[in-house]
Length: 504
Image (cartoon, rainbow, N blue to C red):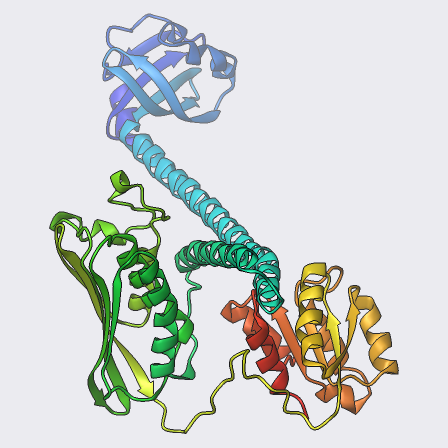
């Protein structure tokens, strides 16, 4: 009888057990459990105790899936079919599906791991995004907040230098000026490294006179060289174009850092800056810059290390510095698709060289005046300026700069909510506006001014005074119809030149 039942219910890896309605085993083929005839089914495994009540119900069929059994052949994972027959007997079919369930479990595990990994990746991306946003906001706010006091220092040092100081007082002022400049350069270097990491180190393009730029840049370094009893030599190729289009601020950073590095590590001999024209093609000039010194030199194995941030090779010489100068120079050169090379001989000197490309400006650009030559060009006897600024230092700095020219009336507003009522009741020639105002940002306030019904106010020049000058910031200011941006820390020349451009 069992053989007939096996044929009609045949399955691979299967044991067939025939038992009576009391659970006693009548016959079995012994695939997993051997020598079990005349035993009770409940003795094989505790699982079988659970369905003994159903053996007395005729034509009953029960299916149990994924049952773990400890058999004579080892542990298996099985499906079990229990079927009661017409003759008060019952058939149990135990099918070994261990491979199937293990594969299923492995598939489910992989799927779960994939889901978990996907969730981890999503959380990681969210964390990185939040970290990036925090870093960007920190850099922007820190940049603005640190430039505020620097503007005050720069302005008042200039003002003090124009007063009747004795030699000792001038010495103190010059010391403050040198220290503030050093602080400013350190802060700018740190901010530039941070901006580079978040992809916000960008170039602007403006016209400037290369010869005037180089001679002005060299002047301060010649003074430093003289203080160390060093010779400073400039070689400027007469073939270089007069006016070029590029980023003079970034070029100044590159050359300042290279020259400062040369001055720092040279104790006798000379510093030399060589500027020459490689070629002009398609109205683009390739210009070669070379800074050489007769200093302590660098070992060849350290040529790569010197361009790493915060790296100082000659600490035994106790030379002041933050280890950022060459890293900044290299970053800015690479930003302009250039490369920097170094050659050096220990105790004899070092030479840094780079080639940078600039567009040649043939449009006869106007010369920007320095603070010593600036004249207010407008036709009015006096102009009405509205300054919207919450920093008392900046307020006083702007007041002193404008008062010295005797061409301006100045109203100062600290609260942005007071600006609209003033503009509706007074005629203003130029609005100077801080961006980082309390309650309302300067660009949002500019939008409100442009939306006023008075057509004159729609055209009144608005000049932003801010330390937030990332590309996305400048786009936002342009969208708010701000006419000009003066970056903090500003000096007398940059402020007056910006105002002059918008006077009628």
